[in-house]
Length: 208
Image 1 (cartoon, rainbow, N blue to C red):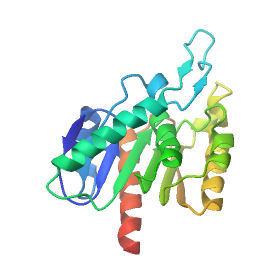
Image 2 (image 1 turned 60 degrees about the vertical axis):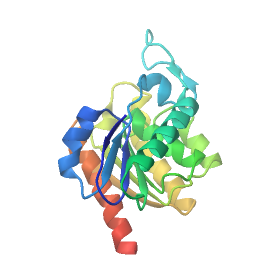
Image 3 (image 1 turned 120 degrees about the vertical axis):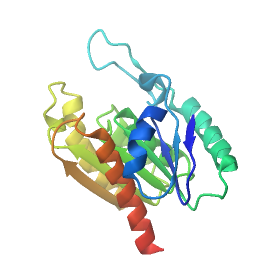
Image 4 (image 1 turned 90 degrees about the vertical axis):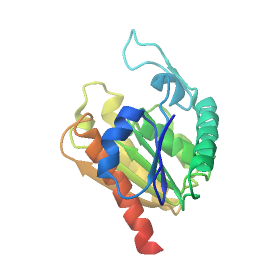
């Protein structure tokens, strides 16, 4: 856990301190907590699923335990800040984006949720979201234009699944933004994450 103290909202990044340092200059005033998953394929997946390739290990489905650890880290970070943050934003990229949205169905701790190039192709995700509405207030989704052209057929579902996720969120009353970006999955991740944070925080300021 790495905490960069500031003022205003608390942005919880599902990545390491190195990524947080790159991201921080691109963000509006906020505190930034970096909380990386030790094993992305295990900790950021809500249930088990086969690996992407024949010889890959299965995804572990360890999100429940990781969410509990994350909530503990957030409480510790809040206690260390000079003032209580006005709101909290959970930000994830790739499998972290999947986890962020899943966490939003399990807890109302994070009113703002950002899934950037989220792995929303994950087996059973859309069916799960349809049965388990998001408890967040606002969600930001983004995807690279080339991502639905992935050679892996499961990953190639990501465009359709992201658009269905947007529709399900809107239908359940969650204010949702979906933006498409140039390039593929790995194009300018910090810039994309910063755009997600700015969009959600600017929307909050406009409504406050």
